[in-house]
Image (cartoon, rainbow, N blue to C red; front, top):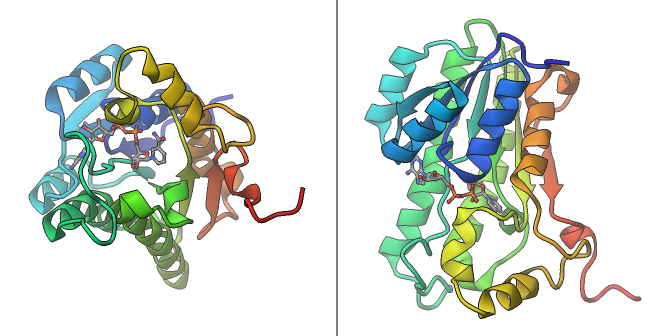
Length: 259
Ligand SMILES: NC(=O)c1ccc[n+]([C@@H]2O[C@H](COP(=O)([O-])OP(=O)(O)OC[C@H]3O[C@@H](n4cnc5c(N)ncnc54)[C@H](O)[C@@H]3O)[C@@H](O)[C@H]2O)c1
């Protein structure tokens, strides 16, 4: 069954990882997909492999969003997926005491400003027909505190809340434009590479990262894409302002729970 037949969907940060998998799944569901990313070389290569369209877009840049609006003035589905941890260049202090203001702002610029601009573009590109689905990729880090990645956690929490503002605003206007957030925990993508490293300790680091996850493994990009497909499709027409955890059970309990 092709649940997105003929729909025009835009995905940010689609060159690789979760964004790439969402784009691939939407194509399987019959959608027309515009992949976007700031990494033009990888983005173009990915789009070529999928026989899809690519537009270079740095989510922090308003001028890039204006160009996208010219190229795609009306869309059905928007996925605000592009995100950074702040550790792309290697280990940096991101705890509340030692994080620099510049590093704090750099993470928020991509994750939060980028999502704000993506929602603003999408509402404008959906309101003509008064229908659409906006999907924001937050994180389980948007639901709990992360002491050593405070900027990431703060930006992802703000995405969760902004998704609800967008959902309510669109509903108030009488539009059937929905907005929901997805909250993955550890999903194995290139984002983890700087933290996993190479060599004999890689396997031990991976195991340690999911040691507290009840299902004891990383999630897959396809598992996240499956939720995005559901939220994009008409089947979820009554779901807006909601949040979906995909975390192997991580947030189902706590260390303080009995047993
Ligand atoms: N992988 C996980 O475990 C995990 C968990 C929770 C949430 N997430 C979120 O999922 C999303 C995708 O993560 P991923 O693991 O696929 O990451 P990734 O690093 O593999 O891919 C991110 C993509 O975003 C692009 N990007 C970065 N900055 C950009 C910018 N300014 N403008 C446009 N594109 C930009 C990169 O070029 C890259 O292609 C992110 O928002 C991330 O925070 C990931």
